[in-house]
Image 1: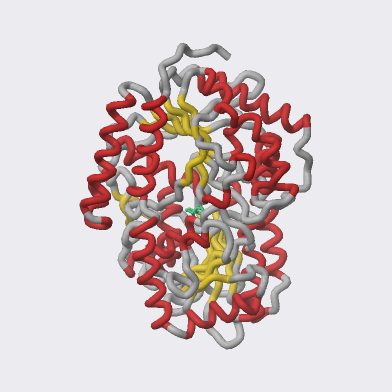
Image 2: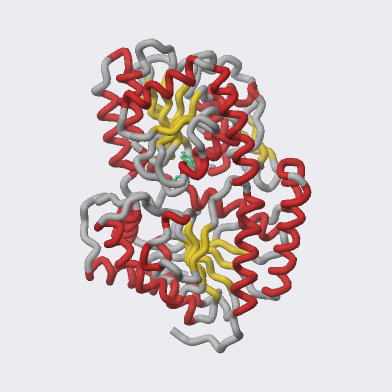
Length: 492
Ligand code: UDP
């Protein structure tokens, strides 16, 4: 049904059911039994109620990446978990991107967040809420993800749903811009039954002592196309086929396993900006995979690499992101990529030949994931040189593959890596010399790389897999349902 006033309709994303049992060989019997118990308790408390998740994109970025497996395992555990995507126009996503940048303490496009923006944000979400209300019933659980959906809290609470707002972002800093974003959203959150943050540091001061606050760290799915094991031959042929490295064997394997268990093939090629031929499979690659977002600092990494690493090493740099037309809720991507290409043209010849900018195909999200998987496995070093980072799934993804990581000491990356134990942290993400030292150290010292990679894999196994994440959600929702008295639905 199109949304009134907008020619839009909320999209329901299909989710399959996967048995959480498959985690047993990875994490052991006890965490899986604990999850199983939590799911059974929740299922009994929920009865026929559904668990709706609402976010702003079905593909691209960390939230979509996590929802797909979490909801699939929830369904596999017997919970009726569903996923809807809010619709908005370009102005709505400009406003929410401004909020997003603000939560990172950044000005973004420098535009206002005043009464006109409030009005537009509210109006778009009212239209979405109308459509959502046709599906949500009293006693259902509604999990709203990030600023794009916070404005739905009052309507969902009024509909009698147990409404949770889950923030995936936050800032190490507290400045006027962070305050401005909070004052925009704060009023919408008063009726939420729970407010979930990725780390304690992201809980704003105005929620100090509020019993509705919970901290749940993100996770990755080790079985997804992004993280599943790939043979070295598959890694090389996938990267050769997409054009990122020199293709040696045109008949090599390009297969991965889709979430539904069926085989997938890497078919599309990447759009690549590069001078000269692709590097051979033996050339060490430094890789960053990110959305084309200024805060990921792809350009800074390129300039730092050109300045500090090109001389004295034979490594190449690969900056890979989604094809910019493929991420609906990220209006700044085109501009950030364009600036990166302009900066690449300005590099000295020798450096330009060692850097490639790669736009990965987005036509098939699992194919995209398999290419990212191959890149993170083939990389000699994975970098995440973010200026700010909510969590940084790309870091956990590389750590899971035991690829050594150099990453900024910001945001959720600090929860993942203890410097020198599970990877190397950049204390000042803007310091090219520190970047160069860390990269050269790992490029030149395979023993250190191996030690850090092995410890990184253990760290992710212990802390950042979906089993832990789901157990925390199940416990939280069960506690909320248990203490929510049945009440007649209010109309809105
Ligand atoms: N990603 C991807 N394809 C791309 C670029 C990024 O699948 O072309 C994925 C990446 O592997 C990670 C997610 O998008 O799973 C990004 O999450 P992260 O927490 O690193 O950053 P966010 O985009 O949420 O700020």
